[in-house]
Length: 309
Image (cartoon, rainbow, N blue to C red):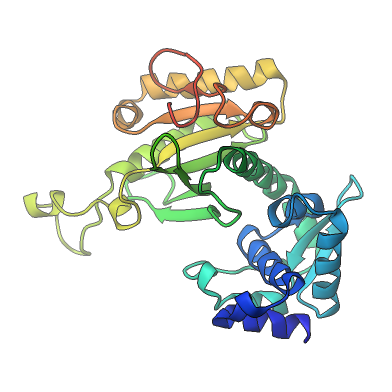
């Protein structure tokens, strides 16, 4: 059976009858469809962290032979993999990707231009994934959904809120608790002020209640469902993950986020209802997201777990 036929078989629900290698091919395509670009070592950590690396290499080689995936070579000489147009067409209808737009880079050059930010976002995801596996929590490779966009009210500023990712995480001990988080990954490529302004967008989305076109706001409209309630049972916490600069510079950027939270009325209101926190990516990788490496953006600057901000 070809890799393409295997992928179709898995999509039709018979993955349980497929060989282990065939299931790995299906999972690899699904992961590339969701995350869009993944370094080979990162993909190995998602697919089979306890297996030898040739397992992942063999899966990717078969998929590339069938024209479903391709790679670009990073400056580190590592390969970063992505779906071809053919691979994206096959994955579009898969149930685990329902509601997602499957986009494929046009070529290796386009993929390489995305690599710096996209692979840093995947690094953040892998930190949560490794921690969840260690703790026995429910959080898998597809529970980090990148580039989620929501409309904002057209009262000025940005017309869309685009989170780098939305995290769906279920802690299992001491009791089951579900967490959702908007995640912003900052590589210190924009000004600190511009980064802090993202908090205003999250605050605007928190307050946004869409109104029918041509109608003025009424008491009934004000009591209508807020925009975010159409997607989430509770407004997700907002987590900023910073990297790409010295420890001193990253600390200053976090302090600017805290200043925006304290100084902007709409953001201060958000902070009174939604947990907001920030951490350094390298601290997540060295210790764990559940370790006390996060600074709340409101209140005392006491480090805590991301679940406690």
